[in-house]
Image 1 (cartoon, helix red, strand yellow):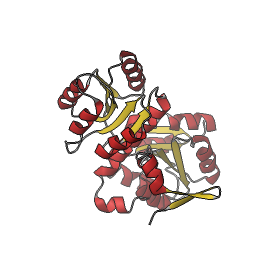
Image 2 (cartoon, helix red, strand yellow):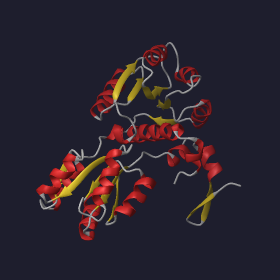
Image 3 (spheres, one colour):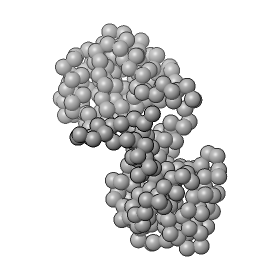
Length: 292
């Protein structure tokens, strides 16, 4: 049975929506993963102030005054950064468990005591910030501890992106922008060259693929790319606003289909969604069923 979403006085059938734009449900389902901060502090007012100060469209903030609740939130949300007051009840045992365990999140402690600062450093926590420095300084110190965008999206190295387009200006502009954003960018000026780049660089996770290129067109390249298992997610780029071509590309295996001229925000959102989808596919099937 098709699900329906009420819009005004009408209900939009999601199957019709998918037929109109085959990639939109993928993008809605696999949006870019937000960075998540978990704050554990004995003072609820500080938890509330930091939550409001740190929360942005790209950063989700959770807070608690309990080490036990922090352990539950940690298991459920897998934060990228934990900000812990060691003097909260059971704060030191929580820190010890985090340092000794397989946690991937970064840890920052907040304290105004030299004794506590030395104790947590001896435990192996590299960064401690002064909780008495004021809200602005505390917020800035915590923000500076967040992983950069590619790390947040699940890589411990720079994420590889291949741009295949026969227009020099588009290749150069998009390449420069993504390089500044921390991606490892390679380029190709035709389809044949794109396949050679992928063969020599298996670390590429996302391909921005022009539809119309010399020697080998985008559709032909797409068919070759999706034969591999696993293969990078492919985002088609074209100036042709043709629904049938878009549907055909998505049916072959493209992750997304975006129109030129491409806004940087659209490109980044599509790449982020593609990376999030790749991370999702790595999970065991039972975790996918319980994903919240």
